[in-house]
Length: 136
Image (cartoon, rainbow, N blue to C red):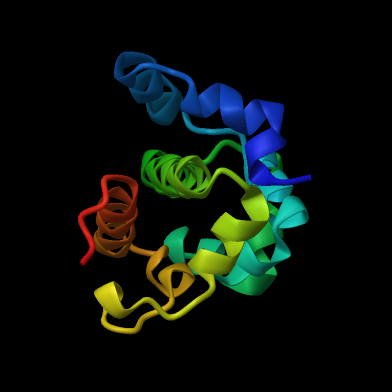
């Protein structure tokens, strides 16, 4: 199963900004993190860093509500994942791009940038450039 076909994750991403604000304020259920790691094990280290925890403590988040900051990290991360799927139309192609050095990102691997807001913003900008044909 990919993140794109996971109904609870898709439900979060389909919300308008006001509804997302409410979800983030209340805290996302940690079960979402568990499902993300289960469906895409290569995201474990990214999520550990983004959520400010350790690999051994990540599973402790699975059974509780995330705080606001952690919830925002998850929503932002999922938005970039969704954006990559929209651009490439297939999960395997999106995953391949996210795991490949990209010249427009200074030869960084997009997945290595997803643990910070600025990194996710850079990846999102690169995806927009691909989507709108802005690369020469």
